[in-house]
Amino acid sequence: MGRGAAPRHLPRPRIIRGVGKKAKRPVKLITQPEAGAGPLIAAVKRARRTVDIVVFRFDLAPLEKQLEKAVGRGVTVRALIAHTNRGGSQRLRKLEQRLLKAGVTVIRTKDDLVRYHGKLLIIDRRRVYVLGFNYTAADLESRSFGVLVRSRRIVKEVLRLFESDANRTDYVPRVRDLVVSPENARRRLEAFLGRARRTLDIYDPQVSDDQMLELLERKAERGVRVRILGELEKKWSDAGFDARPFPGKRLHVRAIVRDGRRAFVGSQSLRKLELDDRREVGVIIRDRAIVEELARTFKRDWRLTGDRAKRGRGKKKKKKA
Image (cartoon, rainbow, N blue to C red; front, side):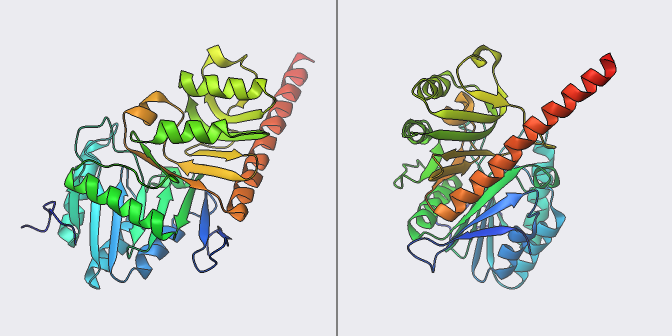
């Protein structure tokens, strides 16, 4: 079997540590644009046995170099690359050729789903990075998050997902905190939103799924404060929750903080296509330190929307005068 073929059996950035019941397995939050590529480069650099990476978009030359170096020191590196993306398929094929030349085992995703949009990095089969951002300079300059998880259950489940997609076999989720589209994302995120009692703070570039929006409307009617940073369809502008454009340069994450106690970070928007027709991956976060940091970041970003509105009103008044 050639090195590039898909085998049947596949052998100081800003990072917030959350210490839960098992302090030896901390959860870590990576916040962009503050962290940059450093955490990912360091992760590959520390790999001793295996690196498994799922790619939708990729243009980070330093990270690509680290993958090549990992192969050079005897690490088995596998790259599962999306069969297509919008406007970048030729780049994906060129990336495949470069990685093959470097000794990476390259596998292309099946074409049964509209897109394979998840972003994962698995190190030594012990640590999983679930990312809301792609491996691109543009995404590293955007507001986004990534989560490093060392939970054995989640690592094992993400490896099962990787093997299923690499070998093009059916995948059935077994761990409730891993949110995978299209298999369980709608059900899990409906349950996650439905348990809100006080607040829902949502980062989402495009909330448009009617079923999810109806659920948010019901929560708002029952007194839950719902705030959305991102775009919202105009027909939902009077639904009882507050939606504002992201005040920064660019928003490229899907994240939800519920009641300040639980959070979700992943690649799927509350949008029908991403819930039902694409491969998307996210994770439910229970660690209080991580949830609190996500909530603080949302609060800062939300405050900026008010500051920007005030500046805009000031300019209008000045012009009128």
